[in-house]
Image 1 (spheres, rainbow, N blue to C red):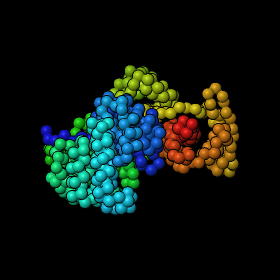
Image 2 (image 1 turned 135 degrees about the vertical axis):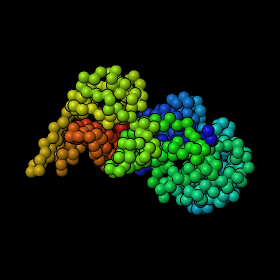
Image 3 (image 1 turned 180 degrees about the vertical axis):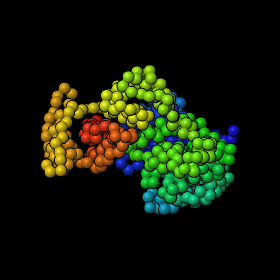
Image 4 (image 1 turned 120 degrees about the vertical axis):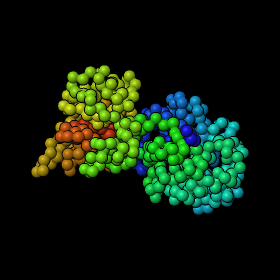
Length: 503
């Protein structure tokens, strides 16, 4: 069967550092629950000392998950470690993840520390952390540009001090796959006591080789891979979990390794993360892109019709893309049929979630004749993970190419109805100005985008709005056949998230 490779998911920590991504606590918990369904071994939930919201998110995830190891990040600083302990103390399976830079450039210019000082700090903080945690992961930041002999020395010392996982990251995506394999192998072969711990790799995608480097790291002796759903992360992102897992699954006989991932939950997890982060998946993205299993060439189509394996090395079903064409949903469809449809699509909802989603589905059938799996995915992912301080009651737009665009909106605040009118340079501008006047707020719009999430003339449009708060970007989304309605609701949703977090 080969060697078990643990999958360490960092979507909620490193992935959330993607520019423009700001998940609230409820959204993070939702993703964490889905990652547990995916059966990842480890979830890095956040960096508790960095903010009050990050602390609360790690704490809630730690108290929610039953089977997955929950990790909190910390620098080699006592205050960071104490904060991580406070956030994780009720976790079923807690792990501390401490890090310090070890490359010459980082030690000189970022830390202003010598090798000896880095080594001393690391040992003392690992020993302290061991008084609080059984599981400790130590990361040598920028390891791939560090002196390998210094790494062997520091790893030997932290293992003696109590570390149970050693992480050798390619922090800036500098490595070439074969060199990274040899680098990992050198450290594995020359570090005393390393056979007692897990060896982890964490690769960034700056040169487009994060997945390749991760797999070659496994071939060099790594037993854990750190990655993120859809490759989210700083700059060019992290190694994509779905690509690593399916590469191992497809070539397990060659690699002689395996993971415990429930691959049929990959597509669902990818869509959920894309939806909540508002980072869209490129159509030709491996494994989960819209075109990943489409065949346009006549030669390819002919081969697929005769034998799927001619051009498909993995099946859509293996990653959770189900053919639901045998079930037709419409206005007369009942709850049982709807529930069966969701199960066919590998979508698992609580009773409360099922009820609210079914209500949205029935509302959609009043406006749209043919309901597809894309429609269902869209309404399932369109969850409001925030308090709706403000709700749209009604709107009216007056626009044309020879008149001044005006918008009138009515917004509910509890039982109170707030009404205003505004003009603007186009329908969207007028509507957003009317909302601002209604709520007596001066909102700074950072980004507005719209896309079709389903097919046909009656396709659902998804609008994403990003606004600037005091310290963070807040993202609002909504879907509707009416793109003006979706735009107004997306703007209000972003404001609701900002109000909730900044109160």
